[in-house]
Image (cartoon, rainbow, N blue to C red):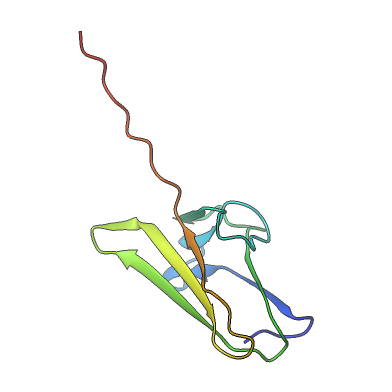
Length: 102
């Protein structure tokens, strides 16, 4: 639930373990283009930010792929008025090194 002054900041802590925090790569990340980071212990000051009317309910959905728990996706849905499109944060695409042949 969003409290006054009409925004909320948060992180996701796995298993009540502060060394397993899922957070954005930048502080006060309001934009879904900011990649997710973690789970790790480096999330101090790096919070997600959502806005909406005070007392507005939101739903958080965290998806951890069984084959790749280090690639989470976080979806935030505003479930009361005004309804908005979901905000989705994802991990940054991983670069795969290519070995040169020759």
